[in-house]
Image (tube, rainbow, N blue to C red):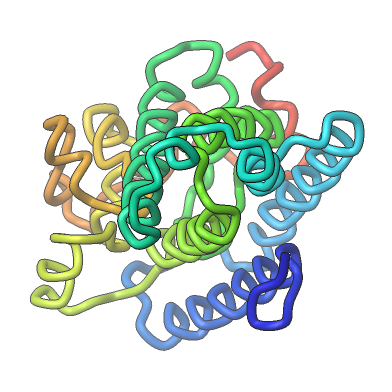
Length: 269
């Protein structure tokens, strides 16, 4: 399967690199907050977590070749899933797939915060003490593997088109890079954009050290789920400049170290 002459992997990687570079340039030119740590103190760890995740996922999928895209290809060829039965217009199926898959990711994120054993894994993401584009890739390998399994199940149930799945995953990854960026938008721009998609100011609230704010604003792409399920917080109580990023219990140097970050889920509090 190819998009714009690129394989699925090439398309997703090219999209990721392009958006990452754009966000990095924008947050350098228009920073929202003063950094607590310089990039060189955090980026090796965050990129290291990404590499560890890539290796772990590659090993798992080599043994059990299941990804959202491979599941979509199999479902399409085997006639599995809702869309392979009902025969709705392509545009409607694509729209439904986008909305449903985005909700699945939102629901997974909510569950990761409220099930203790899953929170042990997800808190690796939240221990970053600054927020920028690199935070968007700071997810423990165990969390990403669980996410792949969940998305694959949703894709199988829907029978979503493989191209729609690839585009959706690229869009979600791009949205995560955008809303984790240390990027300053004007108040008017932020208010309009967050009516539809999650903005950096909206998602930054979720990375507050204040528990009530951490447990809000779970969205990655669409902003409607947080409002619909009444877990939306408009602004942090201490303001974006006064708030503390990260988790209250992990404000020392540990989160800037790769071994510490990868071992956190297995370490006693």
